[in-house]
Length: 243
Image 1 (cartoon, rainbow, N blue to C red):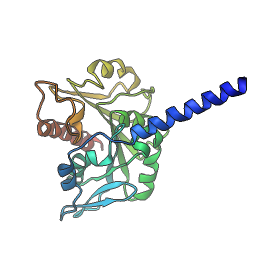
Image 2 (cartoon, rainbow, N blue to C red):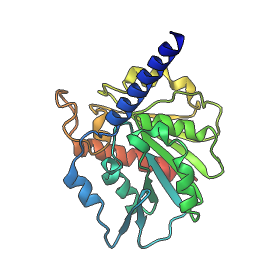
Image 3 (cartoon, rainbow, N blue to C red):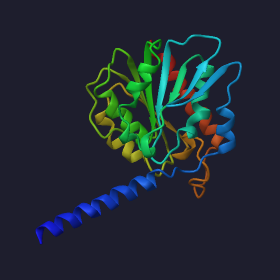
Image 4 (spheres, helix red, strand yellow):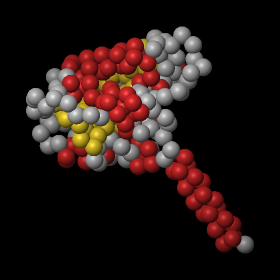
């Protein structure tokens, strides 16, 4: 009888895990036209798609880079419009696709990015939502002589990294229904005391990326382009402030 119970529990766990991974593998919708444009190389930015999506300045050889962990159920392409803009400013920008669109299954993927681009001397790791949580887990054991910054977009830590010597910036949204202002505030003690917090008024969770048709019921929001501009400007200022 005990053996049958154990087998039944194992079978149930297999079904639950398989079902969860299948559900996570179906990403949220994103604006295909907007992302398709961002993924086209130009005389300013060379775009490469393979293990990563990389945006490299054509006119310069960058020594600083930003790598990005997308959130749960999110295709890497969703953040192509944002990341391309960093390359236009002279940074190498790399989006890391995650197994089953789940950043927690690829926490150490940043190691592969660093190995692929040895000319980059200084990195900032960024993440949106659950991607930010995974980025926090990564920096706990990262080489902080190379990783100089952590950028959290609509995200907060699950672990305490308050004693780490890394620059941190948190950009959140006042009308975020997922990573709510209360959740951001409740987890401040887990980040270094000098963390720079920015709250974008009338912004929401989804307009950090090129998501489609999410939270349409929310009223009084910034337009997607207005929020995107603020997210980029605040993020770029963080990168530029790191010596």
